[in-house]
Amino acid sequence: MSKKVAITGIGVVSSIGIGKDAFWNNLIQGKSGISEIDLFDTSKFNRHYGGEIKGFNPAKFIPKDMAKFFGRASCFAIAATKLALEDANISLADYKNKRIGVIIGTTMTEANVLDFSVEKLLKDEWKEITNTLLLNSFSPSIPRNIGTFFQLKTPVNLLIPNACAAGNYAVGYALDLIKNGELDLAIAGGAEALSRVAFQGFQRLYAMALKDCTPFDKDRKGMLLGEGAGILILEPQDSVLKRKAAFYAEVSGYGLSCDAYHMTAPKRDGIKKAMQKAVNNSGISMTDIDYINAHGTGTLQNDKEEAGAINELFGAKRVAVSSTKSMLGHCMGAASAIEGVVCCLALKNGIIPPTINFTTPDPQCDIDCVPNQARKAKLNHILNNSFAFGGNNCCVVFSRN
Image (cartoon, rainbow, N blue to C red):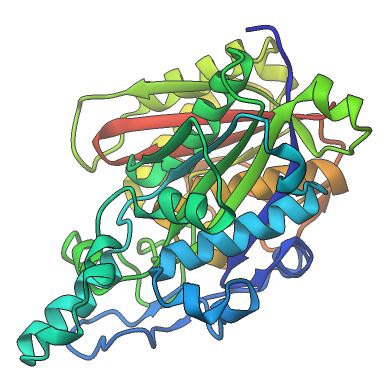
């Protein structure tokens, strides 16, 4: 398990940009991707905003005769994978004899396909519910569709439906498979599409803000949902050096914990355990962490418990912490994967993205949340936090080579 694993390519589809350059430029400028939802009718809800990706055209990445067979989340994932492979300068034709794995995290899979199906049934238009459409509603559809599109005969094609931490779980599992010598290359990350059922569900939990997500702010009102995909290409570092390729970061370790405490309420001890394990497994100390990309949902309890855990672990060190969900919304299973892309770009550029919409400090969230303005910094080790329903927590450490 001593083999080092590098990230050589990143791809992102988000409400603030498609592709790493547009995404990063808007991120460090603090631009918001929050807008009124157009994908479905929200008139019967009392919330109407989210991080919807406007104007996404699958035909830019997928031939039309294929795109019609894929759900929205799969289209995001395929587009992000294509961008990540190009970024890594990898032609899959040269990898025919390599063991390539596809590990994707999600929360709702293709729930918008179910939305469409129910709508058609209610209108007695059931003939529009095709076999292909139904196949896309099953949980393995996203990694399967990536494999189909890229014609990958892979030993590992796996979906991890571990809610809001799923993207980090996917990266952590990919790390283990490469370190154990089971894979030569991994396509890992997360994908999520906005759906009526998810929107209604989070609203019924009274967890959603009206218009702005304001993590760590005293007057925060809750989260906003988002959508998109983040894909990271992982390879053994010796293979990367052999082909003289550049890479963004080393995935130096990750940590897991399961609170088994409450379905939605976070528990500080569980958060601390995941963070501590990630740092320990990376062979570094807490004082080595230069920046934390927070889970930072903007809900009262999550932000309070995460901030408290950070302060208890880091003590006197005032580590920089920011929540990019303030710009993107909470992209559920894609969230921590997109935030993994953020970590790679932060390491490369030496810039910490801001937490936007911050106005009033909260004594219960007494952290340096990099309010409203990006910040230049020397970054060597970044901790990426993600905490899911049921207390399924996963934190990943990204390190400069």
